[in-house]
Image (cartoon, rainbow, N blue to C red; front, side):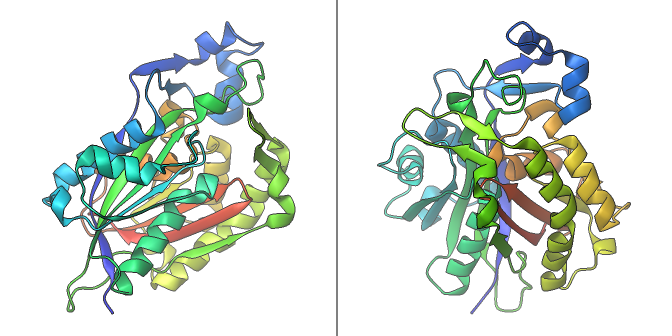
Length: 314
């Protein structure tokens, strides 16, 4: 058995920017209230682009940066909760768009924790010898499921995608993806919902906020423990970009003043399964994290589900 590591990252966002001031023309809200409550200034909205389009764009960038080619990829996994079509799955469509021949291809839906779930399953596949090189993607088009008359939810969500190329490590090389810590709270599964045939996102904001700010920091610390990394060693913390106050609350409880805290929520909003890889890719692109440095990823949300792992920055 061997481990795995992230070889390269990529991200994609639609060109259309939706500002708080524009939202204030649609519902009874304002820029100051949105910034104070959730920390969001702008979000991106896809116009004429599908989840698969955005996923393929992010994956294509990651693949181009990895030094591998489509012929090297034998597994494609997409985390999403906003694919409209039941079949074919998004992973197969991404593989077709990128010219990847005969990969294992599946989608995974644990909503906002999806990327960490997907990364965990890919790491397991590599360790088991079922794959050698994989692309893991978080992609969402939440604008399709947003009620633009509901001021409590329409201010939150955005569209986008982030991707990672994952490869097996050599026998003498330490693993670059730590053991996943994952789980769920099924009794609170109704706190975030996209239900029915023509659904809108609905959520019980206070329920989610209380759970996230009280229950998640100890779980994130467990992910560090499983990886054998002390919180004081972390170079960065990349949580799901749900709400700036939630991010600050978890980071404070972790006690990691030395770490960069991802705050892509400000310019991208909540992009569910896309938020962790999108934020991580931007940090790496800007050169804010050194190659090989330990980074804690932690996703949480609908389900209620959570998952996280420590990875080494590519």
